[in-house]
Every structure is written in structure tokens, then in C-alpha cells.
Picture 1 (cartoon, rainbow, N blue to C red):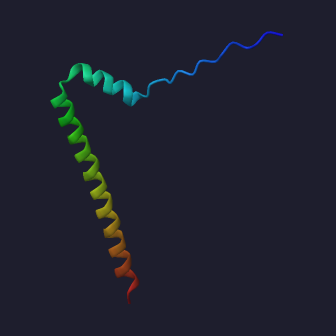
Picture 2: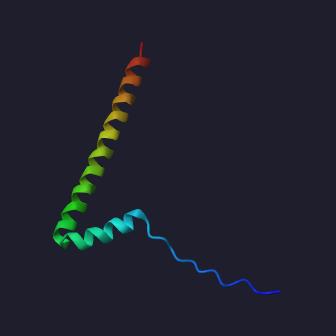
Length: 67
């Protein structure tokens, strides 16, 4: 009986990793930092908008419950 050949576990890069590699080739570090800061701002704006919507729903529910 022959032994099975050893299995190689090579991680396949994620789409994000590949995108960052291309980004590093195309942009200077200052542009990368600016883009990442802008994306962080977008995510924070979305979070705040979600919080506002949830707060509005809670307020509307509390007003409709009262007689």
C-alpha cells in the first residue's frame, strides 16, 4: 500500500487582499491613506444613518403606545 502524497495547504488570497495588492501598485501611499480614510467615513456615515432610523422607529413606537 502506498502512502498518500502530502497535502499542501496554500491559502488563496481573498478578493480584498488582491484588490489591495493592485491598489498598492497603482497608487502612492498618500492616495491609499486618503481612500481608506474616505471609506472609513462612508462606513461611519452609514452606521450613523442606521442609528438615526432605529432611533426614529423607537420614538414613533413609544408615541403610538401612549393613549
